[in-house]
Length: 143
Image (cartoon, rainbow, N blue to C red):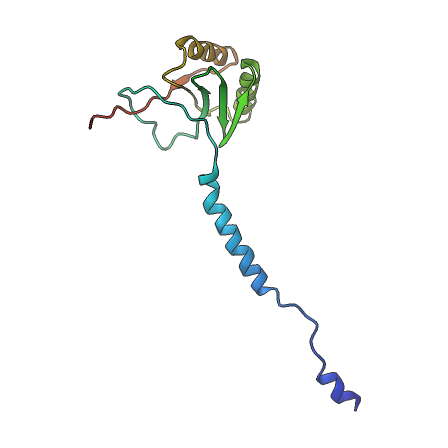
């Protein structure tokens, strides 16, 4: 009688394959939505005729001045607001120590004071940035 009971007992194991499938679907969803959720600083760039950066260049460090004169950096996809220029230059210096060939570009809202952009470029130069590029909006020739 004992042998027949042992064969009919329910198995106390959990099938984890469906849980792994759900986790894979969630991973794909997070990977697909991460670029969409990235936050950035909205600036209205001045329009100018210029050449686009080549695609083989590393992702640049973007230093931004908005229309209210606030400074931001975007380093490796992370946007930071800085209370003063020394914090911005510290962040850029650390990023350049880790990867010295990373290009640095400045974008300024077209409504910001020209002086704010010059102050930012001068601070970057004093922080050891050898070359600074300027970001512009392509000229709209349609309208």
